[in-house]
Structures are given as C-alpha cells and as structure tokens.
Image (cartoon, rainbow, N blue to C red; front, side):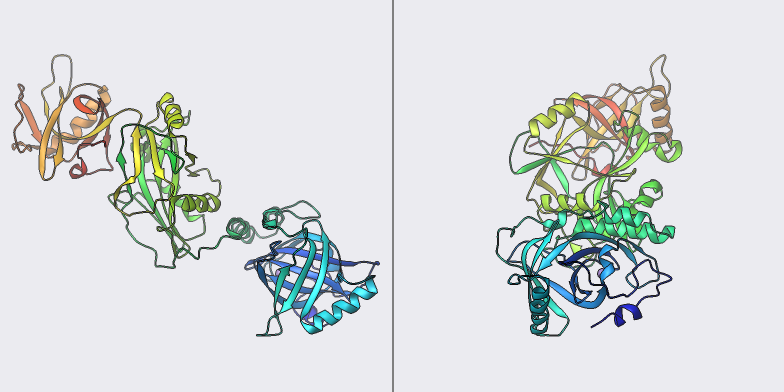
Length: 525
Ligand code: MN
C-alpha cells in the first residue's frame, strides 16, 4: 500500500503527526494500539510490516474474550514513526482530536523463528485475509487473528484466540497511555482552541463512560414531553431487603429535566416551569451536551449541606444558599427510552454519564441496608428515605408500591381554608383553619396555631388577604368556637404531626410547588 495515501490526507505543517518515511528498525516487529478521539472514539491497531505500520480502525476496541469478534476497518499504512505519536491533531485536520498510545510492544507470527520469518508469514496471511499474530504489549498479550470478511477488502474481524491470556474482563477499563500514563482527556486538555478543546473533553468523557454499554434493550423512541413523574407510596417503617435500594428523600422541588438539542426545560410535578426560577441549574444541564430526560429534586442546601426548603422558596430573590439538582433517574437518553429497564440499570447508566458538576449531583443510593440508612438520616434530622425496588420500571404519573417513602418525621400537607382573629400580643392571625381534599370535598382536619415566626405570620397573611371570601369552603362546616374568616383554597402548607394524625399540626412551611387540589391525607400502608 505504501505511504502515498497517508501523505495525501495530511498537511505536515499543520499536524504534529510524523512525516511519511519508511524506517524499519530493530530485530523485532513493533505493534501499537492508539486510542483516538476523532469524530467517534475508536482504537487503531497498527502492526509493523516492511518498514510501515499496517493499520486497522477498531470502533469498539480490542477484547480479550475469544467469543467476541470486533470489527476492524483496514485504513491506510502509517509511517513507522507513528508508533511514538501521542498528542492532539488540531481542528480542521484529518482525524482531528486527541490520540494516546493505549498499548505498545513487540509482536510476531505464532509459527515464526525470527523477524524475517515473521514478516514472510504475515505478508502471506495479509494476502490470504487470515492474519495470525502474537502480541506482547502492556495490555494486550497472547494470540490474536485478523480475518477478512467476505463483503469487502477493508472489513476485517479482530478475534482473540483461546490461550492463557484470554479473559472476560474488559481490558478497555484500563484507559491510560502505556507510555505516558495520560488519559485521552488529559491529552485533549492540552490542545489549542478553547471551544474545540472543551467540546472534545466533554465528548471523550461521555464516549468513555458509554464504552461497552449497549442500549439494545432500550428501544429508540421520540423523547417524551411534559411528563408526570412516578410517585412513592407512604410506608410506616424502614426495612432491609436485598432487592431494594434506598435513596435520600430530598426536601425540595421534584423536577423533571428535558434536554433536547441544547434546549433545557425544567418543570415541576404539575408541569410548572422551573427553568427561569433555577436558571443556574438549567445552564449546567445545557452544558451536559447530550439529549436526555432526567428525574430529580432541586434543593438549596445551607453551609452545612442540609437542604433548606425556605432557602429554596426564596432562592430566586435572595440567591442565598447553594442551589443543587440531585438527579436520581434517567428516563430517556440519546433517543433511547429507558423507562422499561430495571431501576438499577438506569441508575448505573446515569452515574456513568453525569459528570461531576457544581450544580448537578448524582443522588446516590445504598443497597439492601434500609434500616441503618434510615437511622443515619433521622439522626441528621433529614426528611427521610425513599425505598425503591431495584428491578422496578419507571411508570410515569403512577403512585407505585415499588417506590416507598419513609419519613423521619411525619408531615401532612394541608390547604388553608381560613384563619381566626389574632389574640392579644399577636398580629395578623391567630391560627389557620386547615383541610384536605377527599374526592371533590374539602374536609376539615384541624387548626394550626404554632410554629409561625413573625415573618411567617406576615407572609401568610399577605397571601391570604386577597383570597378572603364569604363562603365557607368546607362541604360540612366545622364546628369551631371562633369567628373564622374563610379564604379561597389556594395556599397549601406542610405541618409536622404526631403519629400521622392531624392533631395540632405545627407550621413547617408554605408549599409553592403543589396546588390545593393535590392535597390529600397521607395514608400509610
Ligand atoms: Mn484513528
């Protein structure tokens, strides 16, 4: 083949790649495997023969498992000096992107006595379309074969022969250069052109995360829009079980993120847009650079890392606290519908593709040990845990029993139906009259007079004032001994309760992410 094609594809004043020179050397034959982040991440197997490097691009990389056949596309011969090339091929050049020497060493024909003999047998093998060779590298060792496919001259299969080096363990996990120890990402970071470099680094990270990941069991399907998240059923007690995983129950806004062609839409469980409200999260999601639908919780944590719901509700105005999006599920990814994959598989994939970012976090889980995890959470006065069956599929909009929430402190959401006059020494109102919906009927569940700060009293009163109405919103008017002022049921709040019974709930916070009609009694089961 010679080096004419190699030469014709390159301008040597614009690329650091070696000039085309034939340069046989030494008494052993050299091989090299480059890992190359061009448009697609791939591996290039290069075998020295007659002073040049015979080359094959292997899209999925070599494998040590004899059962796996990897497609290897024969490409132009490369000069012998290419064995030492590691670096960045600049933007605009052929094969632009970063290259590392993933593996390097000597090789020979299995039946050959010396280099000359090897070359003769290899030349014959090449011609026949059945090339046998033994690699002695840092990562690849033992006998391999390259077998030409019938369909065309360029398509070959790279196959590991059965010997003591055969293995089912993925060798591609060893991702560093055999020469410098650098990763592809590290090499790419040294490249020129800021945007090209950033794009490449992001692309490398994602391609490496997805290496050997096939989504054959997740069908291609259009990305869903405006979905309703899957919901958890309230459970009384934590438990241990090998088939379940346990996550933190974050005290924030449940939020779905749709990332589509660089556009981000972030919305609540009622499909109220949160994109503008939490713009820094949306911006970070845009930077991910892939299409996906994510499920998670937006929280604002204080300096101790504890989620603070009040900081969250005030975030747009105050900008105080640290805004985070804890992502716990992946529903759609690069055109694939993942909702029918088992939860654990979705979470593993999510963990792989989510880079560490200041605003976006993978919400981790523990396996099996629900009780211990719950006790830790409770000890830290956090909200509770969510138990999920590790094989559960994602059922949009459904409150499932394969997802269970266990609260460290019992809370109840209530609709504010009215208020009473303040007593002496207090401003705005005395207590709130509360209800929950049962079907279409609003049922009285109690008064709440405790837990309000001066600021809460004022804020709630200002919200209620424009909603005052003559009509009592309860279907059955509660028998109370105070003169109540009724309001239109729009404001909801969460209160602490004891034993799950709505006795004298203590005000915790207003909720802006739920509508009144969604407020029902929390039934445990
Ligand atoms: Mn290449």
